[in-house]
Length: 291
Length: 246
Image (cartoon, rainbow over all chains, first blue to last red; front, side, top):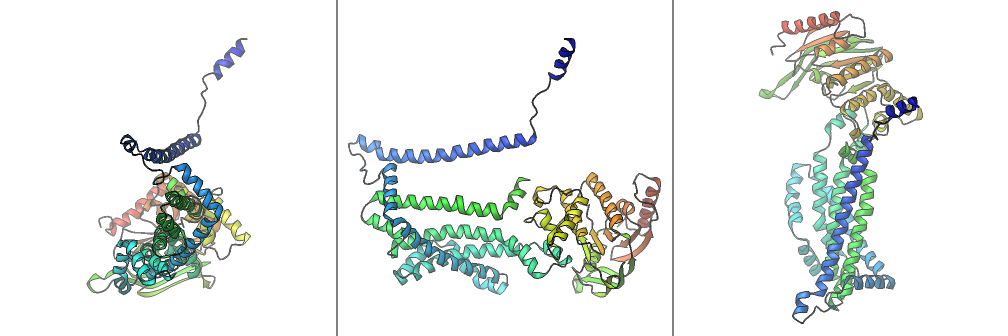
């Protein structure tokens, strides 16, 4: 009896031990929950404001409630979304728009990167500097209108508008990346007698990749907007064209549906495609940030 | 057996009024399994000499021959900062400087990682390691190519005293085991005495002022009387050369 009592006393003061890893995991969980809470809240607020605008309390009080045709509610827009999806119009419109972006931004990326490389020479820097500045600061709408006037419905219009609005973003990023080339790593490789091809593949390209990715990300988001704008003004297919038709027909439900589709696609691109690329190819940067 | 022969080595930077003499008429021979430290104040040309030896810079005048058994010797280099590719894992950083990625090469890299106590960190990125661990990777990388000569440029100067001491022990152990020639640049006389069997003292202006043999048994403890006496001896040489004052 006495022995058991002594043993119990000896073991009693033990408190549960929490490891550092558990604490870090808990902190991460709390941070994630909090971030998602605010994110979801933002959607609830937007939907509530939308519904509230529909009620138009002040107009209602004056005896003139807002016509639901002018601003259909969220549920109606979602219903129209599935209706259009079912008709097959949406994939065709996305295909037309995305093809334009792929051609225009693909060319813009190549041209921008080439100019970025050329701008390492002070003569070419002088030659391209103002063009880059103008492209960065001029609103995309200017190029959209000019190309719409000059090329009308021809596919060259959107392509040139995309190049003019986005090449400079790629140029600036490539140029900055080249200026920041890690000389100490290149010297290290030389001292270990690593060949030029391997040096470029394992040092220069991975170093430039985040700069190219930033150019790609921002350039694409602008190319996307500019393409839709060109379609609004001068096209017979694509998301912008569908929006114009809806606006002309005063079909707000369909107009908002296209905006919703646009929004979902942008979200898919950012959250699924770009973040996956980032996780896959830039894992080392997360390691640097975390340490 | 590796050999370094330096004849009438001269290195200048800039021209006209901006001309700076980094190394002046240096003549030197290093042979075999030696651990040679190059000491001197800042601006005495230590790092320039190392850069010339490794081919990063070319001399203005003079010749440098680094051979091993009659062939051009393969050099390894450990830098002041680890200089690891941040986008490659520890193992890939070692593989980057290898000629191939065969299984035997991978096994060799793993063996050297284990030698620097990082056998389980091969799949980590450098950003996930401490400064001391990164420097260990740098040392393992240099040894992993099994060089004939290993050049080290103040490799422990960025580290805290305890980590630096532990790494010095590991380095000595690896030098002893692999029988390589090590040329070690440092501004820390204590470190030079603890590790080397020969100390070359450079003065400002890049001239080789003294060549001191340290014939004490390894491993050396800085607290030992003999090591302390040797350190005092080198420091006296410094004073004689008026290096401390400058």
